[in-house]
Image 1: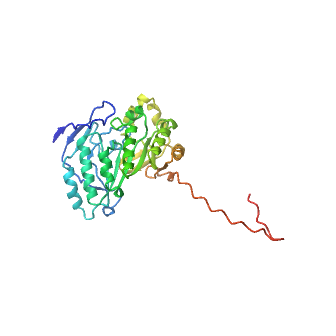
Image 2: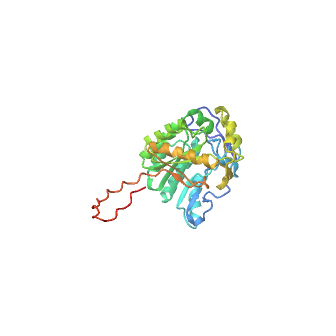
Image 3: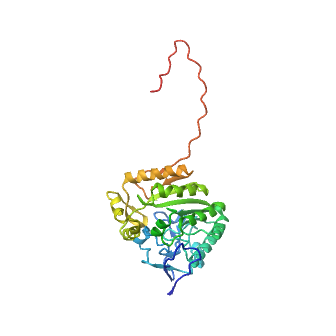
Length: 342
């Protein structure tokens, strides 16, 4: 195996940050993984170009799974581009949709991996396969052009929780700052690509505040985003130390575990057992986010996957006004009148 430090793209990082070591390896497991809990003939698959993630997000659940190669390590198989075609051909039923990437980020600040992502997307689109791209990375114009070449087969979800530099650098040190991510979203919308903003993680008293979210929601509405998904962060043993350390400069580390005291524990996918904010606090916080989103022209919702105990919440467009009712003729003499409404 060859050890190599990949070269970051110019302008990707908003500050000087240590790049993770990228180890080139030969992939042993399957490239295409069927959706968890589904069956292979459902046609839904996921592809992770790397084991581990370059973004270094303090809240990332992958730290607690078998897919994490360890702190500061990123495993990448350069042969993945040539392998995707044969992997598809080997399936009895070809994929209907492929998600990039369930357990990593397909657009890290590493040129070699980003290039591989684009080449895989090209091959998927050429085969008529739908692509779902999930990222906190920088969406450049070349990415938007490629995705815009087949907008009917593409969906993109971009994670962003703040426009503030200090919050972003504490929580997601290798990701581009929020304003740069919004520029990428704007490029996608101009290219005709369907985009969902993922407002996560919400951390009580930190990223879920009016001061943090209303500027973000207003900007999302201004550039043309119409739908957003919001979720509160969940805790697991592998995440808590890194998240608390990240929150120390923000003065929020000691409050973190206390805020989740008494909250439920659920099993969520590969994350396993996860601790959640108490139900009432989650419900009230999400209701505020939904209301602020509506003010900005956004429909903000939250799904049941991360909130099994909470019915799906979300703003809905106002219902059309009912047509005016026909005037009723006056009741005849001696006729009974309907009782007045109470």
